View 1 (cartoon, one colour):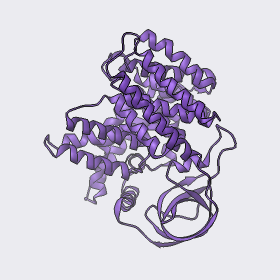
View 2 (cartoon, one colour):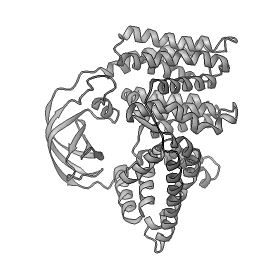
View 3 (cartoon, helix red, strand yellow):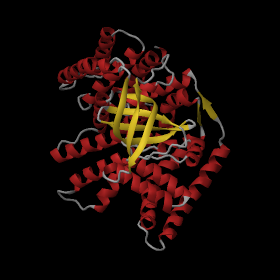
View 4 (spheres, rainbow, N blue to C red):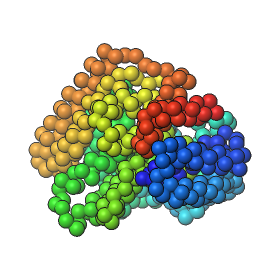
Length: 467
């Protein structure tokens, strides 16, 4: 237990936000969060109190009290008063949104969401003049509905601009936004469709609608979202290219964070970057941290930075997967590692179906191969694309070779999905089993005996699902 104090602090603060969102008064939420942390500490001490347990619990109390003082008041901070804004700004983010498009504009007074018709095309990095009325972001009428405020505040937005007048002032070619823009243009203009879509997703966090639809049909949409898989691949390639020495870790850190920013700095990418950086620092100091503690510390940092991440599906799926994998790969048995795709599918199916209504059973099978295949295919396709992106004559030959590899994978995935066409709809049992499985695996990763982990995981799941 003492090896993963950050997990207890993360769990306590998540429970604090969970109860607060359901209308539980703050004193009761705080008390429940502290009792839950105490329960886990005591339950993990059935075979004897581990050293430093008291220090760990005091640290958890400190972070939970900080959550009550910092996180909850920020979530409940009053809406901004509408005001007229006339300012220069920069387009920080843009994407399709329903039948139109949406952009996030950064100005000296804050960051604001703007909904636009599909004919209005602004790109990231564009310098603009914006004129309009800033209004607060809308909150969901009831828990479970789409909450505009939570979604956009997790991306740093302060409000939205109604009926704006936006004029292009110039194209931005400097900094990370300029790099993203230039790389996007080169990918769009020089690569064949499958290579283009996959590298847009992996390098820039972009989305190709046709490719996204195919991956959705295979149950592998997570491969198009920049996550720990992609960040880990970048670090692995850096370690293979840079020889061991005093500059290896600093260079790996610099390139990794440049990649995270260039890929859009999503919640899952930031979590992965923080986790890997914690490992780098621990290795540099000669005190390597447990993976479970590093994952939890990264998640806790993100919550204190932007507490609205708690309601972000990407953050929840990323944290759940990372916590489970950190427990499975902690050396407690190789059999569970082989079944990791099935366990991840079962653990996250309840969350996915709660948002999208159903989840493909074929995804459980396809992901057995998808993760190892794409761990090799994505870096390989990037290197195959470099000559074409650099404008080297004949570079298209290597790009077409990469296209062929993606095509072969698509044929296999289509065949598998056609042989297993069933979907699992949302159900309370599916959600309950997912929470119980996650609780069991994490408790086992914390050092609980298997029987104790089972006995405690079931009531934890019942409490969270039925509340």
